[in-house]
Length: 557
Ligand SMILES: Cc1cc2nc3c(=O)[nH]c(=O)nc-3n(C[C@H](O)[C@H](O)[C@H](O)COP(=O)(O)OP(=O)(O)OC[C@H]3O[C@@H](n4cnc5c(N)ncnc54)[C@H](O)[C@@H]3O)c2cc1C
Image (cartoon, rainbow, N blue to C red; front, side, top):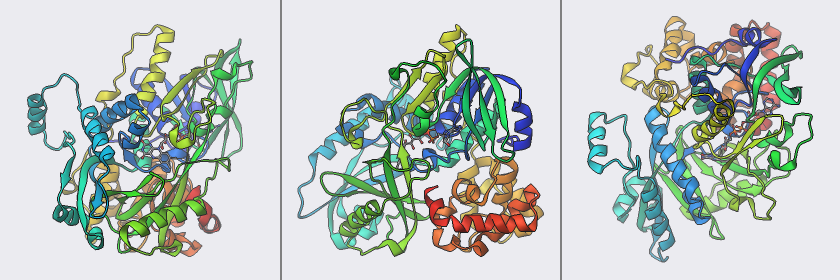
């Protein structure tokens, strides 16, 4: 079971004036991965996050753990292969949190089937072959030994119209001729970050959010720690470290030690914005499958089921706006809705959205003038003459490889004997809904959702709900998330605000935005948070109002 993250005050005490072997800047998936990898190889580690964990790109992804069929077009074969192997490993390490989803690419009577898709899927199948060197018989027998623990994707196949409609009834008006069926995986991106952080904590890493690094401290020209500003007190705090790792994603080119650096020692980020919208399943449902939807000019988007809603995305455009608060672009929303309207024969508009969000990809500019869609998603590791390591680019799916690459460099530099273990470290502990005992009145949907989100740690949520039946109530009527989760978020996961809870502990800010616009609607959340943090009544009111006045910003924040 996950241990509690240190409370913020305990973390501050453990950090201030101390010396660690490694300080990681950035609490997205990359920083979380580096913290876990380094801590599990025996390093003492501290991780500092400016805002909230996963507040950057890692809460704004398409929530897929995938090879990226699309990158085959750019012949990014190494990246696809690596990501496909990681996909399989993630299902194994976090079976409760990373799950396979069938994807359909339908074709219709009037169209010629796009053979390139079939070719791409053949390559995808071959590249997804796991554990090179393992025979099919070995794979089959390990599958039989532990059915739930092992997932190996079936090869893609073409399915007939009746099977298409059985999986995706919304296509009935289009009279599909057939469809390619293949598999990729989905997750909750923030929960993946929190789960990896929970494991890092188990290996002794200390972490703090609300800690903006403002300076890399230099000792004789070497990076020897950082100074950060602690959000609640506004105080500047110094922490010493032998190695500084910059894992700040799209902000990576803003952290620069005060030294003469060659421009090629630091990345040049070329941000690309991706917008997503969420729809009620009564307006558009893809059943339990995802569907690839053509979106003009040879591009495609997807519609997929996520937390009982339909998630539609994504766009991919160069972005020169505010990367701290990227908002869903109006044109992008229109583009996504036009594509699903045309494809499914529906007429959805802005007013039908239950949520929308945008994220910015940390793409590394190589100086060539290619559009962001064509820039590789490969990760890059940089090292300045001060010794600071910067790891950026990459994908949610490939976090473990990025972390390994970074920590391997540290180990090599120091001549340590410390191999990477993260391929064997389970992420959280799986729990089946049947293993969990929920108080009366808690729906089966809540139990399943909690088992997915927390694994075994869902017991802590139910323990609270047993002790205080008020906390067994849903946060938003009709949605499965429970008020007890608000208390857990504050106690065990350093949640500090209503936005932390609604956007990054539960995902209600994206899934039920229209029901959460007013201060009154979020007041119960502020009350539970306030109870945990000792807020006055006035503060509770202010915190609820702060969410409401930022409600539209929060979707992008
Ligand atoms: C629209 C979109 C869809 C995507 N979909 C997928 C997908 O389906 N599957 C997939 O595999 N990948 C996907 N990706 C890519 C993936 O989301 C990113 O590669 C990944 O989340 C980047 O993680 P990161 O930790 O490097 O950066 P971030 O998550 O941005 O983390 C960086 C952190 O650093 C913090 N920080 C910044 N400055 C400071 C400072 N001075 N002090 C302290 N902290 C600081 C930030 O607050 C932030 O939390 C998608 C990306 C986008 C934009």
